[in-house]
Amino acid sequence: RRQRYRKSILDFVLEDAKTLTRKVSGNDRMKLDEYLTAVREIEQRIEHVEGENTAQPDVLAGLEKPGGVPNSYEEHIRLMGDMMILAFQTDVTRVSTFMLANAGSNRSYRNIGVNEGHHSLSHHQNDRVKLDKISRINTFHVQQLSYIIQKMKSIPEGDGSLLDNTMIVYGSGISDGNKHNNENLPILLAGRGGGLVRPGRHIQYSEDTPLNNLFVTMLNHMGATTDSFNDSTGHLPFLS
Image (cartoon, rainbow, N blue to C red; front, side, top):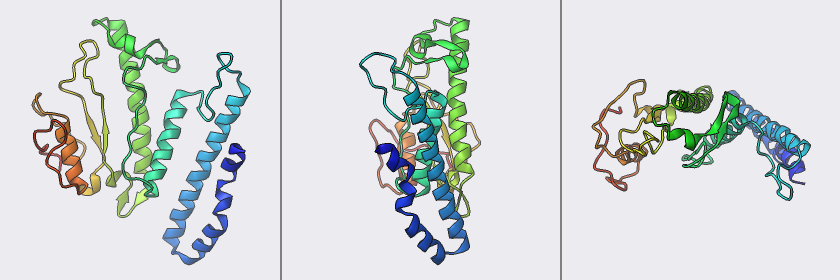
């Protein structure tokens, strides 16, 4: 039954959409069509995944695999990313968190030739082979971020794009898994935040700067009047 509803979800609003289309401007009609097309494309991808799930037997007897989870990890990330983008695009939400795996994940990445677990490899002891595999995993993750960024950049919004009106923080809570070091974190901030952020630069702050200083600055950019968050010590200069 769930599958039937998913296939026909647009049918529930089709008449309303047709009525609305007749009332709005040409630009708004394009936006409406863009939205409905995006919804249907995601539906079709989920339907394809459910077909894959049905065709494959359960890996462990007695355990049912969750429906709608792609066999491809890359497709899973991108499908979730596209649903997040659709929520932003339609203003269903303005804030989202997206974890590629849990914090101590020992996921393997066979799709890029890495059979060992991520967490095990992170304790690399400066072994060049392990470091190379960690680098491949990092590259794969950044490629998925790039997919999300490019998708948001392609969606017009106001005088710019969805990306122009967004701030995306990408990074990790540990800078060196071998030492469990959480200092000098490599953090990427994408988007322009509605003109409040100037991207395309590498800014190096002192090593004792809390990451929460960035979050306080972002909160202020979004109109939240707060001077502190957790262990923050102030604001981050030079973002705009």
